[in-house]
Image (cartoon, rainbow, N blue to C red):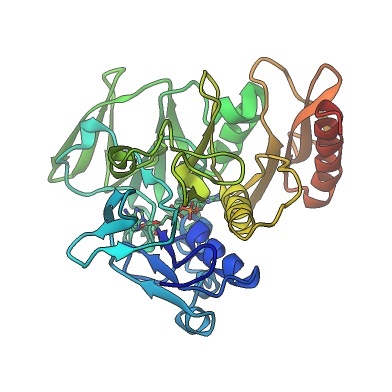
Length: 395
Ligand SMILES: Cc1cc2nc3c(=O)[nH]c(=O)nc-3n(C[C@H](O)[C@H](O)[C@H](O)COP(=O)(O)OP(=O)(O)OC[C@H]3O[C@@H](n4cnc5c(N)ncnc54)[C@H](O)[C@@H]3O)c2cc1C
């Protein structure tokens, strides 16, 4: 066991947050053991390319986040195919499926999220989710010209898959229960525009309906929709959000809500146990629960946890909710939360050209900015958003 203040650090999880926490701990001077326990069979890799470059056969080799040689050079012991299934807070030990238990001085939980499934697809063969490299490769194999792809859920991942599948010549149908894709995060004006953009590229939308049955027939998989119509597909990709696997954490006595409840520096409800990345939520004990989501927030959270564990203070979190989405040639970038009942102002370009910046204002302050194919103009909007956030917090 290491003599440093943290003791030996064990990180449960093998994605962005796990890799970033491990590397940051070393860069902040932790010289004790660092062990990463990942259930996956591959070294940590980046997920955003899975629904973009990997589907389009573009170079995805740059997606490794912690290569074996880098891990070895930093003295990080990465154990693949090691799935954490339980935790004993008193004896400071994590239980690993089919492997010896691992003792820790400090534990970081960075187990991220899983693709959410729908009960209607239980036991139906050939339904595909997209979370891992293996999922992405399996989908890619089926994206042949003229193959019929049904995508259930018009969230960011669903629309990215739809765009890639169209680029590869597939016939694409998107089934979405809401009246427009991404209506919640983008608001009706931009969501309607986005639907039109995909429709122009040949995507068929079935919005305002849900899947009530799924049958595998000789001709493919038939989705029966709530309006009694059907959609036939050679491949069904389900993209209906994520869940967090929290049972082993709550059974151990850790506080959980939508995620593992942590403070802004990643401290959980138990001493020497931290959370980083998408598995975490910040819950105020009442109504407000803010799960960490999107790449930048997960990476920031890892950096913040490693700093707090190392006794360092990073600047206050700006919580921008920044994300990007690449849907074929469309590049979306966004910060903030668009209020659904406020119409955005187009501050640059126009919707028709597909190149614009939309800003949402509440009480004279910019609460969200979304840019389509306008990275430079987005920076200006982001600065306005930051200025509003600082003014709001009295900074
Ligand atoms: C297809 C796809 C596209 C995306 N595109 C974008 C994008 O364009 N823009 C954006 O901002 N964000 C995007 N994201 C989101 C972004 O990738 C995530 O926010 C980020 O991966 C979160 O990192 P994480 O390390 O917290 O979790 P994850 O990346 O989920 O990593 C968690 C890791 O822990 C492992 N694990 C889970 N449970 C256990 C266990 N019990 N024991 C051991 N290991 C375990 C998992 O197998 C996984 O390797 C995308 C996500 C996906 C899936």
